Every structure is written in structure tokens, then in C-alpha cells.
Image 1 (cartoon, rainbow, N blue to C red):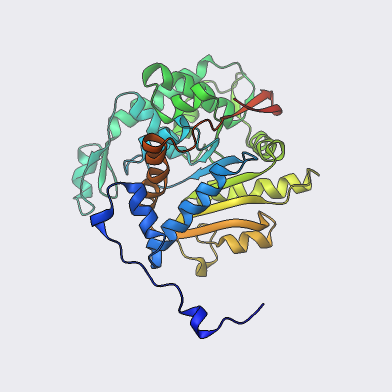
Image 2: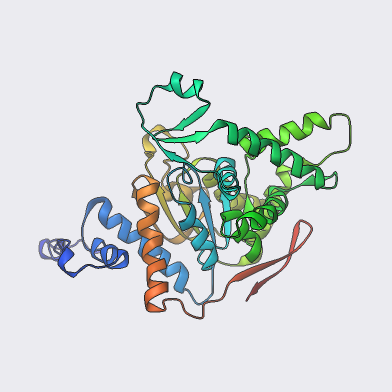
Length: 354
């Protein structure tokens, strides 16, 4: 590679963000592409996202979700991404899907304070999520409802995709604009690999205890592995979005390894961007770099990728909002087709564009 000259290194000035010429989120993000630090990284992530969305081969876009996104006010953004077809598959923590279902029942999250008297909150049966409050009594009601609804399922092993499709149908009856309900209407698969580690898991534990010694519905996590691997293997190219880290991020990455072990010949996700506030120096998955993922074969050796180090409730509205506003106001991606997975049990028979 040719060594750059001094003039070449000093050839691209930073442009100062000028709100006299900015009226929308998309215009702000476009300006951020020419700034620096994490502002520029927001712009880089949007550029990667636009490349995913504009690719003529129509990559399947898988989004990993972790963190307190519903408590943080991100519910409708995620729902709109599904509704507008700019995400095709979700891998989430159980808490996010649970809190979406909780709100589908008409319950709320409430603005609170991070330095509240926590013992007083406990006396009032109020739970705190940083600066947000929830009604523990309503949580308990939601837990029990999930356990009761599960009685409708025939006793066998279910993937979380199958179970959340069932729960999505119930959510759609109450709030068709919920994340679960919108995904159900459009056939967008949702996987929650650590479902037991959530309030959905608490509701299912109540169901399990009530049916102890009887045939019952169970969650089969290895079926999840196989089904999500089908999403990758049958899709051709894939783009991935990591909102936070944790289990969803690792799970999306691991399907590449599983696909390789099963002989599908996949070469890693072709596009990736991540929104994270974690750092790589402690060796944890949440802060691991996308370059590191290439050493495992989880990302393609020539993957288009970007990372922004910012808290998700700041990064997601800017990145998704930029695309959603352009779709609304400029006809961006007009005519772009939606991915439709045709399932036969745990196998994908066909991936359609509809």
C-alpha cells in the first residue's frame, strides 16, 4: 500500500455542523458524516445501513436488541422498522419483548429518578429501571397472563420463534402496533435465546409448576439454534445490526459458526454495524469489535462495517430515524420488497420477496 503524503493526510477538513441548513434528523445525520468523533461514527453506521438497504441482492437484515429499550422510549422506533420492512428478523432479550407485551396490555413505564429512595419504591411495589418506574403489580399480572395463555398450546417443544409468534398474535389482538403484534402481522421472526432469563420466563415457570407431572409445552433452545441458522443459510447475504450486546449479539454471530459446522458454506455476515457503550479491553462480548468477529468467521472478510460508541437510546433514534424520515418524506426505498420466510416446522422451505 502506498504511504500517504502529508498533503493527502491533510486533504479533508472537518465540516462544522450548521443548524441553519438542518431541518430533519436525516439532514443532521448527513452533516454528522462529515464531522468527527462519535458524531462521525453515527454517520458511518447510517452509511452501512443504507448500503444494506440499497443492495440489489436484498440481504436479510437481522437486528439484535438488548438493554432497557422499551423503558427508554424506543418501542415505536423498533415497531416502525418492522412495519416499514427495514429489518427482517429480530434477536432480542426477553425483557424487551416482555415489556412490549406489558405495554400492549395498556400498561406504562413512568419517568422517575436514578437517585430515588429504592426502599420506598419497594414499599409501593414499584420497580426502577435507572430513571424509569414500572408497576410491579402490573408486572405480576402480565407474568400470570403469559402463563395462562400458554395453556392454549399443545404440549411439545417450541422454538422461541414459534412461542413469540403465538404471543404476537395475542399482542396484536390488544395492540396491533406493538412490536410483537407488528412482527406477527408481517411474519417477521423473533428469537429470544435466553427467554427463561426474563419475566416471560417467570410466566412460563408459573405454567410449568402448575402442570408439573403433566405433558406440557416447553422451550427448545437448540431448535432456536437450528432455525436461526436456517435464516442465515437460506438468505444468501445478510446484514446485521447490534443494538447493545449481550446474548443477542453473540447469538447472531454464532449462527455463522453453526452454519459452517453444518456444511452450509456461509462466509460471514456481509454488513454489520453496532451501537454500543461497552469497551473491548475487558474481553467481554458486548464490547468486542467487529474486526475481532472476523477472526471467528462471523463477519465476512470484506464486510462493510461500522461501530458507534454511544448509549442505544441516543444512537438508535438517530440512525433509524434518518432512514425512516427519508422513507416518509423522500420516497426513499420506494418499491423495495419485504422478505417473507416460508416455514415448515423448523425448516425454511423458501425465502420470498413480497
